[in-house]
Image (cartoon, helix red, strand yellow):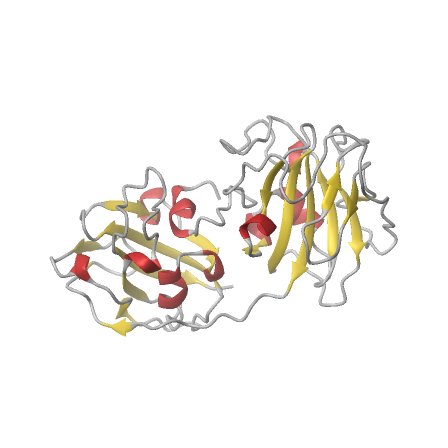
Length: 333
């Protein structure tokens, strides 16, 4: 997702860029131990456990990987990785759990390396937590390269630029235009989320307008002083109930309680956003479950469940600012 919405709702650990998570990138030679040459540690993989597919070829494109499953791997980029025009896949460790399908949301630890420079541009291991995301929101190389992988396994992906970011890599990602990418992915169980405390109420917020259309929101002096996550169902939906960790499609507007200024709106972009609740700010993780599809909920989120002292640069959100959201749940897969 390239929208501003993602940068604002996602925690600093993760922002999906039209596809795969690339914020918190910038490590030159981080825990992956990647190298641009064919020298160094690593072992040639046995790819015999890899399921065949018309979407990719089975192999390593000259990439070698070593290290224990569940820990950041050591990756040596060599051979054809920088020049291949074919998506190349190898199961380094065959999992024993359920096989991923193209419509699933998955939880994974991964490291991403630019094939030409050999530099690590993203690593969930460096952030200390795996990422959860729907496969239909990631780069094509992941959409085509992960299905068939089993939970508990480790897979190597060598992704040609045409199935990654092509001529337009994310700004600051240390990926060159038309550069191939290398990923090592460990598929892990999705953790069972637990809900934090919340209270019912409006915290002095007034909302008008019909579900499905952008609402009008008025704040009061009490709103900015809210210290508890506060929610109010303005319209109760009639569809499925949202559970912790679900992936939802939602329209929403976000307003800074201190400034009174809107900082984000899916309605202004003309389309709802889809995201796993595991990847958004705590106020959404704790505040959205219990909603039903078709409903509208008001959330007043104190700063410690939003962005705390480090709001996204350029977002217009103040340090430790309370945030107000009005959320319409459109659907939940």
